Image 1: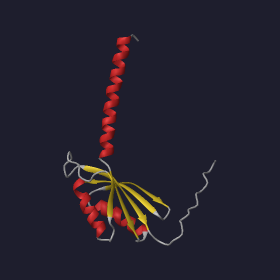
Image 2: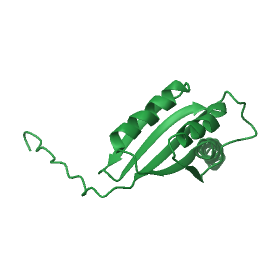
Image 3: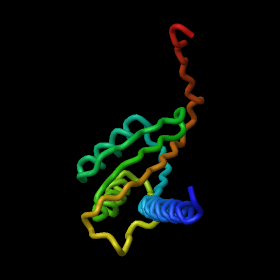
Image 4: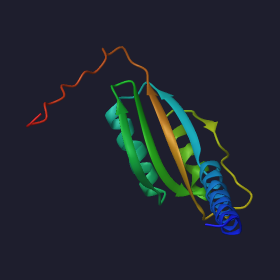
Length: 139
């Protein structure tokens, strides 16, 4: 490959990388993280939150339960429904706090979908929940 062709190739790769990085920055800036602390029973409250997201037209992407102390719910919801989501949680005496990101992005319409996470910490006196992990057959 001659030097002109090598320069053309490097320039093309730089443009692709720049486009990819710009897209990644947009995706990251589009997300938000909420946190909540509650004394409510964890399974009941987690089900309530999932139903709330669904009733507002959103959907749950993933749920992780870390022992019986914390649950993280990743979800997607219309931007116009984020505030009503927080208000519904407030009816259960749960204060939702914005940890990272912005709830209202100027370049989006109210109907644009936003990805977010809700980290719920459960306050209780129960001992740490331990689960037996089954052995994988054949290992």
